View (cartoon, rainbow, N blue to C red):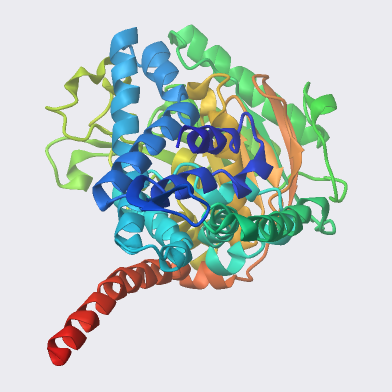
Amino acid sequence: MGLSSLLQVLIFPLPGLYVLSWVAFAPLIVALLRARPAGALEVDGSVYLKAATPGQAFLLAYVSGILWYAGTCYWIYDTMHEHGGLSAPLALLALFLFCLYLGLYHGLFGLLLGLAAGPGRDNRRALISVPFLWVAAELARTRVTGFPWDLLGTAQVDNISLSRITTWTGVYGVSFEIMLVNVAVAAAFLVPRKKRSTLLLAAVAAAGVLQAGRLVDAPAIPADHTALLVQENIPVDENWTRDIFERTLRELVDLSEKAAASSLPSSSSSSSTSSGAKDPGKVDLIVWPESPAPFFTSDPLFREPVSGMARATQRWVVTGAIGSRRAAQSGGSAAEIFNSAALVSPSGEWAARYDKVHLVPFGEYLPFPQLFGFAGGLTKEVGEFKAGSSRAPVEAGSERLGVFICYESVFPDDVRQFANQGAQVFVNISNDGWYGDSGAYAQHLNQTRMRAIENDRWILSATNTGVTASIDPYGRTVARLPRKERGALVAPYALTSVTTFYTRHGDWFAYLCAIISVGALLTRFQPRGKIREKAEVSA
């Protein structure tokens, strides 16, 4: 169990040992199906072990999940302590409670597997059900908890041959494939020893063939448009005064105007890379990220410089900002504020706005405020942000932009709705400065890249501290800026109105796995009923 937790941590950034995903869950599966002595001996004289009871299986998998979240989402401690104003003990408590909560989904997987295994010796039915049960648990984590961070399939985002299955199944299809190989590896340690070598060799061969997809690179995808992605690199804990505000805004405007005029990256240009794209040429779009700066769409000190920049460059501008709606408009007693992305036309008009729909708990709103009031500094503004209600694209002239903000990119079904409603290119604006130098920024980037693959769309990812990048429909970062530097990236992209099967039909595969899981659990009890009927007839 501990080995499985360690391997699960290692397959995601920063370690990023993706090849271990093919065996990471095998120790846990073996532990669940060989958990207790049965009071009998195997043919070779060793003690026969049978599957854990459902309760034991839940506990084993639950502990594994707690350890996995602690090793992968450790950055929550720094976020709460460094930026949230919590003392070290309270920050540790927050991380511990987070792990206890999210670990329940590993526990759910173990419980379901324990139920599927039953009391008998035959584990074939349980093994077959494992990939379906795992995907069902991932779907529950996405839909119920709303925190699908690092879904298993994301570990193979660089495997172009394998990851293209997501255009049909979403990331859950890759999760299924990974668990299928883990089942084969686990099965090799559950069969009699004389069969073990053959089965283990077959499992390793299957993993090798699937992993070899990382050695195959798809052809370059032509890009006939160019965006200017501005990486602001504004400190998360900046002590804002009017002088600092105006100087920062002036510097960002100057940076954007000069880069747009020359159609070349700013001071960070030597560090950016490009592959498979045309010469960038004229900039079509300027994108500013979500940032910790107090940029309000209703503030003339912010609006006027941004409008002036749009007029000076004659470009459409997307900028992260705090949107508002007056009390008279909202029908309430107080004004409402939103985490927003505003669209400014080349004439300087504020043409449209996207309000973030999927807010971050404890970061943008406080669930159960009476219970979690201790959260302190991080939540001092929490409770004021309201969720948006639409995922319709915004229209920048002839281009339809699917704009989503920060961690909305980790929700497969949320993002695909933009493309399903006509978005021709995705724009993700984010402030990853909260994560510091932990692995969270790289984990976030990989999940954003998976959204590009699922929907066969380019993604323009503009972040405050990095990674700022252009991502092609194969999930490749074809241009990027180094982290924690202020600069502007000339980012190639292209438009498309073609939709994938996943874009049109969403999480159908995950729901199918959930239905099959329910069926497997129901049929597990059927043979026992038939045995009773036969016994009654013979009596």
